[in-house]
Length: 239
Length: 178
Image (spheres, each protein chain N blue to C red):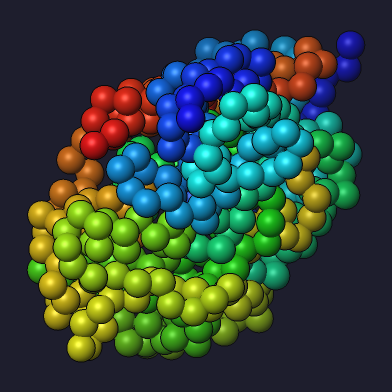
């Protein structure tokens, strides 16, 4: 089935099987997201892409486009909800941007900038989360994990491995590594794997590559993530 | 027209935000025509009197910080969290997952190069809190200026908007967390 959906008053065509976010991206309409990545099985966990479809909240990354849908994406209400969701992500982990290698290139930060997030609103959890620096080339800093599941999907769908998993529920949720010791060094991951590079935050980093790009030249220093994401995802994402 | 009164202080901060404020350079002259400082490192006034705007740098790490923050809230019509540490605790809050005892032992007894090891216990020293907190967890904050530090342009955009009676807003270029 093909047809047209209407996002914020703009008619947008879609093709058979496309989700709302896929149709929107193809038409140059940005819907904020973190766990969605073109070419990966939709996960629908970060909820940033929540839009109103015919009056109901739906995740645009999982909801199929259907002819005649009225979608509200860029309303004050949706943007406030997204800011609150992003603030919750910030206070749940330990996101200290000034000391993070990913700063300036971080999608979580980019989305927060896009949403004009000036404060964290909620009380901080200051949870004690461990780091795994066991692997010679790859670092996991659990303080920055937002459980988007992209590394899990990358390992399974792109690398043909099964290195990562999300264990526990609710506040006990955590990223785990599939190895006898639970350490990354004893897993099958390789520094060239997609799973080592897909992290939208600074939770999974390649060692000895930090701070190579000076402040002012990093991805989100001057460009809004809406612009960056649309360009990247329309360029190479639909594989 | 009476000048507006501005008070500033640094709690658990590094004074980097104050240095950035001074980066207003010649714009400070224009500011001085419409504003004057109450308590601030610039005036050396010890206690804050009634003010229009209070700028708070740094998070809350000890009992004195709590008292100063409450004094500012009581006296300032508009209280502003300035910089990463005031907003989320920042670098000092990275001690939050280490117990206070371990922090003190590492800094004053077990750390490399420590001589005459002893944990400071002068009664005049404010007691440390077990965790470093963002200031919005202690008192109500009216505005937030992110950045480590916020640039002089952030201060300027914010203060000129307030002085002109506009709601402050920041373009993309001025919102950053590092």
